[in-house]
Length: 242
Image (cartoon, rainbow, N blue to C red; front, side, top):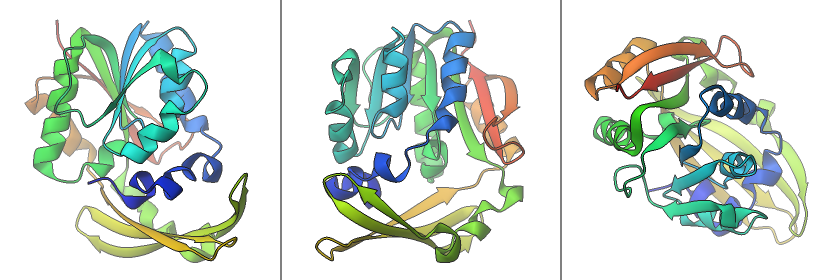
């Protein structure tokens, strides 16, 4: 089930206003150009920021996400009619034969169960044409990013048009092996409503991801650095062999 921050309509509407700087997506736009991608599948598309950027460049985009509220936000945006939106996941897609599959931000890590992760990789593989590529990022566990997830460093008050001021902050709840659980809190000052959303991410080692890709038939072309967070993330570039 999707986390509340993506599935609850009031929280899904906050996603873009609370995180307006999506410079992390620039690398994916460049990658699409680098590989000459004309058809792209964006898994975990959320509110559709990357999908719409790619579609605006004339790329045919299919965008899939299990959170209906987030997909509704995406469908309401200008230019949304240029994207094929699917509410679901990578395990049940129509035949696509795309040039590129993307999973941005925390999408890959949000698939925490090993069986679901393998199913996601398998679904992406089936969606690719021979020679097509899967590109996604995952945080380097050695950097222990979760140690910075606390109220002191994350507290913010954002003035959201049509909503008013919203307080938000994150708190770390648990670290058990590769699984890290945290909770976001949102306070709507206009009416006093308080909503929370708990999430769990799996921090996979580089070698583990490489083995998972090989097990599903991919050829690993490269593991790059994330240009917006150098030294903190792995960007995997995998290919469906010809």
